[in-house]
Image (cartoon, rainbow, N blue to C red; front, top):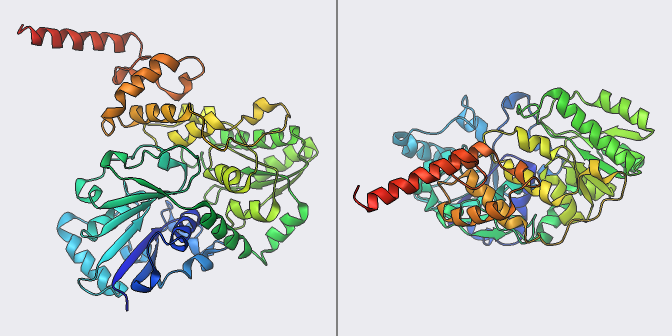
Length: 448
């Protein structure tokens, strides 16, 4: 009989795979004394029209690790998972309702494992189960950036750790560091084993079998930047065309395009025309597969993307060379400055070779360990993004900007942000503000 219930909230198969690896590695204790509930949330803007997590190849093997599965969208219907949270006076009633619906006895301890604690549904769960210990797991490169929104102290004091993959060896996550939460690595071998398990679950997928027969040597990762309003549809289409032409220049004659699951299907015709012009064979695969399944089953020799976490999975867990396209454009476009995608973009821009600049030369492997230049850059940008959460980073940020801000690094920063924070590089306005503050402090010390 279980002595406690563990609730694991997921919205993506990649995140579920991260949790499965942590479970397999014993990071949530032995399973015999806990009841484990998988809480599935579909956070798409229109969940009814989006691909459901249970439709993804490999989901069944992940779900088998849990004692039961609960649909969060159904539990809070007709509310949307991203927009709904309980009013403070209702949290106890909601907890009673969920305990009754999910078979959790009154008074039985509950632990939570959630993603994106800054927003719903994770924040709603933490508020409802107000006595529970909270474990945050990081779904990708955003863990290296600062927390998006300030987490209430009533929740922050209960967060035990940040579980994350070692996607950038040697770089420490900033996520929840302001609350003193320590990061904890999910073992590489455990995650790689889960990815292999997911890939085997794709046996019988006819579209994957056709792709394997084509033996693509390059995989292009589509994203959904137009749907987010970051690029226009035409600009995003051009991004994918640049990926294809760059792969062709590098000598790849069999290329696979993997659209993002939530992106609109509007690119295949333009890509087909470009492939014909380049004399390469193109396959577009929109099966419900993780990109990592393609790495496992097709063993490509190049993966191209803009700033997808799947690029680093390819490099770190499969040793596949990766290249980027369009990162600088997206860095310039994303708003506001504290947008959580800024750090993944920075990491990719700093570490991954630009395919347009390769000129057909082979792309080499990423360094096994992050260079010494990356950590200070990430912390400086992190301070500029969330200065209120990380005031202790200001001296380092000032020193870095004085020493390194130039034409080669200016694209990581916005002058207006530097001005507002009165940091080096902010221009005359920043200098004037600093001077006025110095004058005020001097006058105050003199009693004037």
